[in-house]
Length: 189
Image 1 (cartoon, helix red, strand yellow):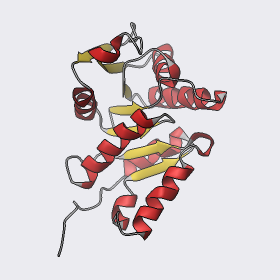
Image 2: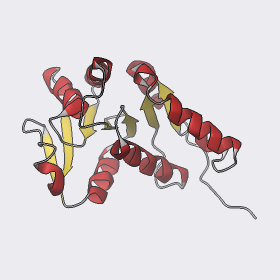
Image 3: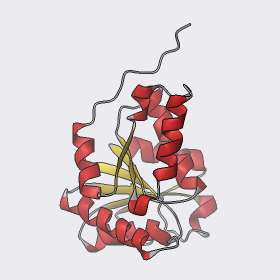
Image 4: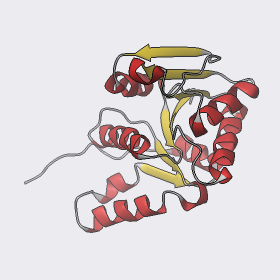
């Protein structure tokens, strides 16, 4: 595992615990010599995880669309910053660069990024692990929803495992090393 893409908020959230979780993830990435791939901003917990990796001596690759370069204030001290034209290009570039994906707490954009990657795994476009860093139980309602999807037969049980979950970045990344993707989704009549 050489690079992990992290999806997360461009704000700090309601509690310092989210910032602390981003810092802990950044330190764990450096400890394991894993390059951070992320959205390229210098603000919010997005900026916190990048700053931590850089301060700890690690490598950070940012991918930011021109549309957000000024609004999200692109980080000026990254190992590498890709500026792309669209959000679609951003996600595709991050997916190309990463060996796995982690969602820190964030808003609709974070969820959209995570679920696109989750869906790509489900249909076999990649076989990389996807994880939710469940800081302060942030993702508990989402996990309940995934379980409800399985119960209501809109998500096959084997794909529920695509969303690896833990509140500790060390444990979550450990799960990535033992991850075995489920078989590719098929539709039987």
